[in-house]
Image 1 (cartoon, rainbow, N blue to C red):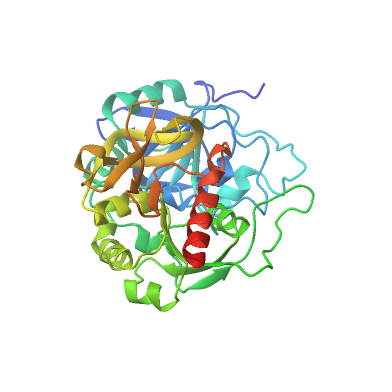
Image 2: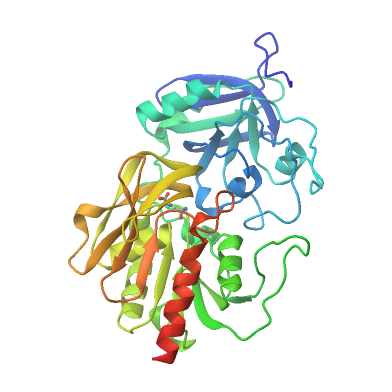
Length: 388
Ligand SMILES: NC(=O)CC[C@H](N)C(=O)O
């Protein structure tokens, strides 16, 4: 069993919460400081996908599962080019990786990519603090000589303005449009390319995870990705069969300032539209509903969701700190999915139109694959429109 950080060792990392609570640990990865919102994730696998999920911009992730780093890091599982989460907090220090796909260990990967890790933390206590006070603002510091200016760190955490009102999609979106043809990973060939003619999908990138694009390709879509600030004219000029709205970081209300007019322009045409997570929230805003900040959000790979249209329960992957307020859904829009943890909204659809979205992550990366059917539902809607 790896030893967690012992209190007799001099701590080399500090997590300072805005309310003054301090958590000392052992630093690894990059040296330095960062200020962010602190969330916890309950997934037992997929730390690499979690660290590289662009929706985690502005957040430090506490892993409630203790064995993080044990399968190393590989060249295939990044959800975007670099880690986006601001840092990670774990109970056990990462051990030597053991996995046939591992090409690097987590610690060096974090060093190269400038992300701080903190080990030896009582993550149950920290998670309880997050649940009790709502996702706190924190300053994370890693200093090998163990010296910390505690007051300054607490002040930095306190002064940080937080995610409400913050548009981060602009920071993580692609700079230019591009085509995507890689399909989902499968044994034994790994990733393969879509070669057959496909349904033309424009995916608007607010911080898209690669596995979402792969799921679209596997469902038969010929995907063109456009930057977050694309207008309805840009989207419609490509004459798509359907429009996809991606996940992404930050406050949907802030990103909605430019995304909502684009979505409303697209909705004037009778096109299938599918949104995931931030894309779900912005579709809801475009339809006239409101979003709210949750207490500590949902982050994990074990979240039960009920599909109200079929009565089926799916176990899902989630990562969101905002939610659509179902009370504000206008006439003509139904709630299609709810969380069985807290009843919060997890999906909407327009009545009589193939326009729908979910709050969770059907691309399952990391997490269960119960919800892949949504990509097929989107593809079927596009095929139906073509043959109408
Ligand atoms: N995964 C996502 O797209 C997250 C959406 C949004 N930033 C939230 O935290 O709720």
